[in-house]
Image (cartoon, rainbow, N blue to C red; front, side, top):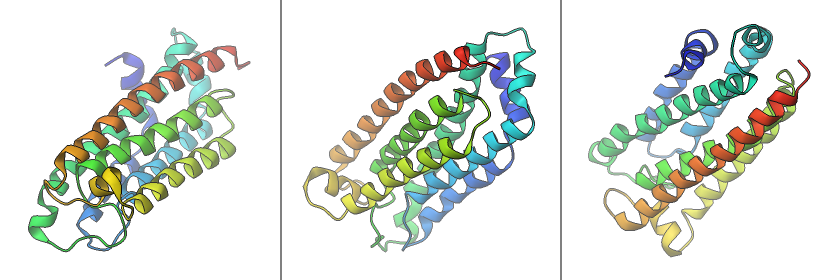
Length: 215
């Protein structure tokens, strides 16, 4: 872990992200849109970067003996840590969900392995929209977070609707336990690849824009 990431975890991150981490327990609720456990953390990241703006963390970071590219990367790495923690926190809940309460979720996506892939796609879409826009100025937050949240919400809505459709994707999203395990793993794998690729592109674009920003 680089010094800039440690600085972000200690000075930039706020406790609300760990509160939203606990909301993975909502996967135990029988009738609930489970994609919301990821969208809540999107809200948590909004609060984090609102603090970045209000506390002038960008300008503080510019005083440190580091490259502007490293500052941009540290912000994105903080988001990656929070997002991956949210996905990982879902795993133990998914493992016991239908053992404790066998009732299926009629809303849409079930608490299963495929849901983790959906979460990674939601976070990947949010990052790919938010960071290139926010780091263009390092201060304008409203439009970037609104558009990124909208894009992430549309992905989540599409997944919830997709669980009611036929075909392999619908079977994976609507499966419980080890049902259609192969399809579930494909969704998880696709989501992981998507998360890695879009974040790599977003990091490159964001770092370039931040380096060019007149701060």
